[in-house]
Amino acid sequence: MSWMFELRGPVSKSQRTIFGIIGFGLIMLIWVAVTAGDDPIAPRNLLPRPFGECYTHTIDVSYQGTDGKTVVEQRDQKVNSVFGCAFSDMFRDNDLIKNFCLSMGFNLGGYLKAILWSLPIAFLIGLIPLFNALFQSQIDAYRFVPLTAVTSLFLLVWGLGANMKINFLAFGIMIYLVPVIIQRIKDVDDVYVKTVYTLGATKWQTIRSVYIPSVLSKLMDDVRVLTAISWTYIIVAEGMANQGGLGTIIWTSKRFGRPDKVFAILIIFILIGILQDRLFMYLDKKFFPHKYQVTEQYSSELKKESMVELLIDFAIKALIWVCLGAYLILALDEIFNFLDLKLLSYLFGDTLWVIHVIFVGIIAYKVKELVEPMINGRAKSVATT
Image (cartoon, rainbow, N blue to C red; front, side, top):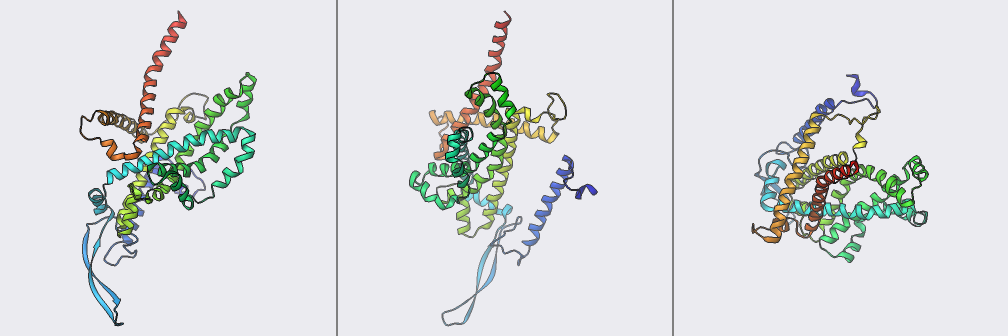
């Protein structure tokens, strides 16, 4: 048992899983304890019950009348719970699926734009001394600007539509991502740069063969960390103009005294974050397998994954193919309307272009995976002949 309190001691995967479940159970137990009973420790308007049926009970409300006397009235108070009725109420009253899809469109669109903006800006500042001297200090200073204080600028430039929300999220991610990429460029080992110079590489060849692969291999980890920022800012973005999204449900639920719905949305955010994290890990292994080599051995052997990790990776692969098939059917319906649904337009609205860009990229990559071995095989056969 001494390992539990050893400074920076190792924790096995099985121990982490078991104690993780115990820790989650303790948190839920505390939540249930402080919200139990008719007179809970935590006020229900601040912390709702996690479980239990929704019901209405009568409470006494006292206030001072116009004649100065205390008046006591009986009023009905509804007691809600997060898993008992919040989710079902949101499906019925708040169009949860559509608002979820809108938020995903805003979030993914913000990420796409942030990465597309950040990479060229960061490489210019990180590699070219002139741009570094001009803009490095300003880029570092922008991180301390509270973005919520300058929302009027985004409203002025892009109006109230989806484009404003996506650009707001993109800028919120970019002000943190650009300095990280610049630091990644500085961290590239000089040994690799000197090696390609020795081989006679030009500046562009050095950027393409050394800097870009090195930075991109580490960028996935940075994007995983910055995922939380986009879900933080999305509450602010969707609160403007009340045009839909999970953030809009939070604002309306707070206004109408439904903290159980607020906590239900927060749970959805957590689940999305976990899924995104696993997806980024899968993509990292897919595109940068060298990061997962057994570093203790001089071999190309990859680190062995547990059965749970293998199952998760298989589930992600299957989910990608299922989503790809569903997208192709629904995208064709957008053109030919043979299902009389146009479901993509209904769910994603003005953010539909983001979904098109992502899935077209996936299709292009899958086609490349199929065609590349055929081209390589023909090239080898030509070379041997």
